[in-house]
Amino acid sequence: MEEAEAAERIEAARKLFAGPIAFLKSAPGLQFLPDPDVPEVAFAGRSNVGKSSLLNALTGRNSLARTSNTPGRTQELNLFDVGDPIVFRLVDMPGYGFAEAPKDVVRKWKHLVNDYLRGRATLKRVLLLIDSRHGLKPVDGEIMDLLDKAAVSYQVVLTKGDKIKPTELEATRLKVADGARTHPAAYPEVLATSSEKGFGIPELRAAVLASI
Ligand SMILES: Nc1nc2c(ncn2[C@@H]2O[C@H](COP(=O)(O)OP(=O)(O)OP(=O)(O)O)[C@@H](O)[C@H]2O)c(=O)[nH]1
Ligand SMILES: [Mg+2]
Image (tube, rainbow, N blue to C red; front, side, top):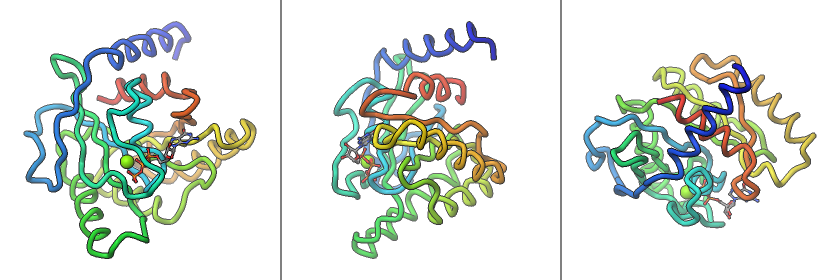
């Protein structure tokens, strides 16, 4: 892509994300979701990886989505309307792989997340978040396989990039991109971000806008 075109896309995305964004609702089950008539982009990833923080960073609002140091903060599908009139929805999801939670709670989250990812007609893109310090874990591979099977397009996004050195971050980014290459539904580019420092956020906004 030409540089001028890339800059234009980033600016268009910045404007959209700087405009009206409103919390719509929390859905504890698929039956509580709104009618599937608007494109959706969802945040998936292990507990505590930084899903809710990334949603806040993208929207430039500190406490739109609830964040916490304790894994298991987000327990339902939280939907946010972007644009007025609405252009698309962002969906913050419970994390997976949170072993310390009670078994029946884990089972409930897993079903909710899996059913949503597999069966939502309006789901345009999943942002699959991976902690920069940890890289791809077996449980991430399971979600990638599920998304491949459901033919849901997803982009891998590294989070907490401020916690490691830039050279390590780039090495992890390339390694994770290598791992994603074997997955048919994975978008080839892996983005490194930091919700804390703000890097990678303008590029991710542009990628989200391009995906809907
Ligand atoms: N240093 C740093 N910390 C971050 C970043 N993103 C998130 N965190 C911290 O990581 C912790 C978890 O963030 P959340 O956004 O709540 O994570 P989550 O994936 O939504 O977690 P669950 O809802 O429990 O699945 C919080 O203490 C955040 O402040 C980042 O880019 N840099
Ligand atoms: Mg959360």
